[in-house]
Image (cartoon, rainbow over all chains, first blue to last red; front, side, top):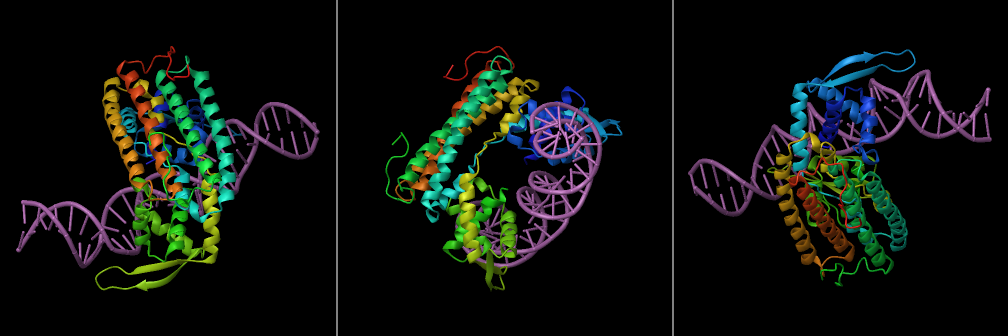
Length: 192
Length: 192
DNA sequence: AAATAGGTATTCAAATTTGAATAGGTACAA
DNA sequence: TTGTACCTATTCAAATTTGAATACCTATTT
């Protein structure tokens, strides 16, 4: 359930202050809880409704306005606080199974047009380079101002971005050399 | 849409041979299209129905048996073959946005119990070590027998597993040392 | 011989996610 | 001042995913 991550985010933010869903959303952006718009706003409203139905949070106030939609402010309950602690440990337990969207494509790469694939990969390498720089910059900008746990998050993103870039570069080389369909082995990893 | 990856897998396999959904599923397992059961079988049947409705594939035969459920065998159409090529390039274009389930937890780590988190992380480090070994083994077992594009896939999994392990080890060290909530900076990356 | 686990094959209700629609506000440039 | 782009705030139908149910077969263990 991706839902559990949204739930944890909502409860974590409501532990700090009562809020309405739209504000939760904007706090999520500030607090590195919503990388690249991973959560759609609709899912957030859905998750808030579910949490309220199950009494992990409760509506405390409805702010009315003639010019804007009503806002419903929520507060976390004691039951919600206990649930937060359970979800927090659950997230630490959950295995990360990274699954690159390209892995599926690679299985069928032999059926595709070698030149078109190479052209796309050149763009991807360029993007990956930018992404590495971006992650490093985020890390640098925040060191000394965020808790170390959050810095680990940023360092992790940077390291993974570097790994991704190195992988893409090797893949592009082989694609350009027309080696993607060869079965005969020649070293690909340093370890060989 | 995660759906596009299932669709590409189904079409790719049907390009090679006519099949019924259950067999597509088992071929997916052999062909590295279904890492750690990422796709649930229900999603596969749904995707097959959709592809059929949109004439990318068509039912060619229903095999009846008194002892087992009927099997519907599907075949890819010309429209489906064109769609396959589009999806293939789309997969190469799609950005990989790895999002570790733990990233959310790290943001709220300060609210959790340091000892419980450390205990979980020790398990995660052990699992990650096994995962690195496993990925390396899969790579070694297949080099020389699978197309190089598939070997890249395996090499990528191995490299990311190593990155993950190194990250977890550093995170565990800081957790055990009680440094997770410190804001003052001390080097975390080699680059510093 | 009976129990247990696992493979074959599909279906369906319920939970969740997405994508677009709604509707006014504000800020800036042309 | 008119366009345009983005911010505030929520809702909802439609698409997708999940999880469990069904039902029978085969192989292995007790």
